[in-house]
Length: 360
Ligand SMILES: NC(=O)C1=CN([C@@H]2O[C@H](COP(=O)(O)OP(=O)(O)OC[C@H]3O[C@@H](n4cnc5c(N)ncnc54)[C@H](OP(=O)(O)O)[C@@H]3O)[C@@H](O)[C@H]2O)C=CC1
Ligand SMILES: CC(C)=CCC[C@@H](C)[C@H]1CC[C@H]2C3=C(CC[C@]12C)[C@@]1(C)CCC(=O)C[C@@H]1CC3
Image (cartoon, rainbow, N blue to C red; front, top):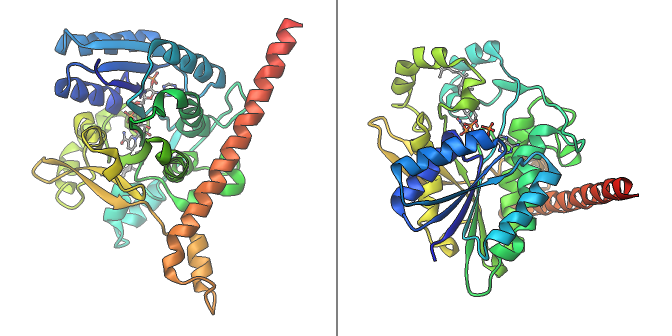
């Protein structure tokens, strides 16, 4: 039987491009598309079957921002399959983005222009909303729903003698400065996207600590800047088309302008072909495209430039030598993991209470 792969957010952009690439590589795959909108999911399945008529593609209705939907979908997946080899946690949103053009203009002449183009740091804010579960929507979609999904699919991921991979689509926009352990949902800030992506980098570390011994390996990737529905929400598509020549030119200076979903999916696809035991849990795998248009994957250390380390190391005398850096990262990721477990407990209790309310 072929390997089982579940991809969330598979009906468009990077997720759909990944599915195309996976099927081109391995026609025996059992590919499951986790999508919230069934019409769009059917269209994606149809497109995949046009190019791979014999492929085994199925759909699971999954809204990762809804606790109820995640639990129901996981139950259905456990019913359908007895194994899960790859879990791609790719669905993501950046709602109501706002570009700070003043910061953009300043950044152009700051000596950090290339960094600004490759990370978007300091340029973007978003207006977040609440889900029906009362969670911040960006956090619920980009992080918590996926965390719950991993927890629910544990029996399929952890199988004696077999290994499996959990792969997060993170971002170069993941920023330590946007993330706060006391506000993991980012209720009080205006950069929920950066916060949620930084949290996914931390969570991947924690998952490795928790699950490696059971054969589950978690990695994070960074797709670069890709033209998808997400980026068309930041600037209209005609404007992106207009500045496309400029972006090709910028590729000479930054290889993070992957631009096409196919290129953005490079690291996701590359990870599919790796032995998970050989992967570095502290690396973030970047999809990159050279000035000449060649794709490649490059591991870079997960951002460890966090202020806790700096604050501790700047104290005189420093309480920690520099080689304690990783331990401190580990502490933050463990703390996040504990907070997510606590939140999971709360939402499960709330759901139980609601169910009891309905039946009595
Ligand atoms: N484009 C870029 O430059 C970059 C993107 N990324 C990340 O890549 C990932 C894919 O995004 P991208 O392909 O660019 O954008 P798209 O908007 O094309 O894809 C996002 C996918 O996520 C799905 N999705 C959103 N919310 C939910 C939900 N609640 N439940 C289930 N599915 C959901 C969307 O479904 P629907 O069609 O129903 O909305 C869609 O299929 C995201 O995690 C994004 O943050 C990271 C760095 C750069
Ligand atoms: C000339 C030119 C390219 C202008 C566009 C300026 C900005 C709108 C972009 C510059 C860097 C971009 C970027 C993103 C969005 C658009 C920019 C800020 C992302 C934040 C999109 C989502 C991600 O996950 C990472 C991207 C990093 C780079």
